[in-house]
Image 1 (cartoon, rainbow, N blue to C red):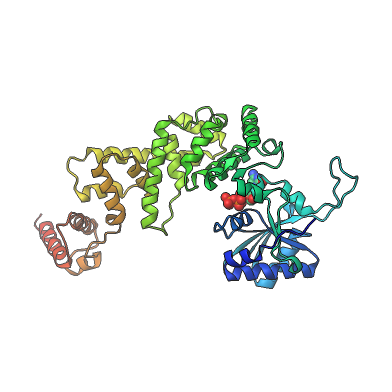
Image 2: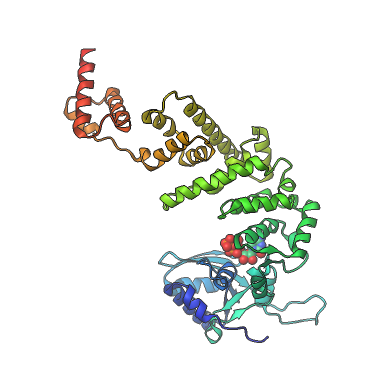
Length: 434
Ligand code: CTP
């Protein structure tokens, strides 16, 4: 094997210094233990494509678990070994996570080749992977640190912008790769290879998607719904007839497509403003996907995707709350902030965002956005304590007064502490008179 080119400079350029250092020291440790160590998978693909990715996957030619333990010890980290699969996760003190897998040092009998061949076990490990672009590795042992290993033409396929499987049984071995193919194609703006498309079509027609646990399909589906642009992925899945092969009632028609587009816009808006607040895009898209379905259909699809009954019921309950919320909003005769607040505060943030994406009228859109950007964080200028001082006692009337002050505050009738206290005193007088 001719040595691959060195991408040490890329490693240096693309990895944060502490990570670069960790990789280097890991290679030295592996060397001292007589193992070969490689950086593999998505992180190498993304490095070559100049895309940020810090998910470190390592393959050890030797014993991944023994190595993981030594690595954790050397860095003062924690190891969680998985003896059965010979994999391990190491968590470093700074919080970084490193995934390790084992490529066993064995002699393999290669089909049709010489009887016993000592094959690079790394190559066999990489050969089992989904697409060529995911099969590159970077050597980490000191004498070849930074050497790019590309057995299957990954660099060529990246240049040609192609998603290609490594062999014709790839989708038979793992039909969930059909969804992965689409996800990568759309994420990178690549094209599926011609042969790969026809292998997908055959696998879909043969019904292979029904041969694997539904949960695996759900996992890949959710990954798709977490992508930057799930709309394009769903278009492609529709075109390749993948959706109907998963479940006959799973469709991506014009109406659902429009909902997806609005969900995407709403999420975009929200994430721009609130980078740190977690919402689950896939959940919003699931609401969109199931919106026109009756509950029985939703349950049937959920079952096909291996979801727990409780989870499917939670989705249905969310859907119900969204419908209720939109109905109540629509029935408001005049839109007073306190009234809108009272309706929206019952909804979870994700439900609210979904409802926002569904509302067509500018007035409603404005209500939702004002709720998100201001009302939901509104704090009235007085607290219960302030009211106790002027003669309230700890009873429901105090809560009622506070709520009224909040409502008046939201409506702009009460603006400051003095105004709120005036309101409270009047409230108290009313109580005493009655
Ligand atoms: N893999 C595979 N078949 C699957 C799932 C994964 O061959 N059904 C391989 C892929 O080659 C991938 C590696 O396992 O590179 C790790 O999988 P994953 O973490 O899902 O993929 P990434 O490439 O890291 O994708 P992402 O960028 O979305 O994290």
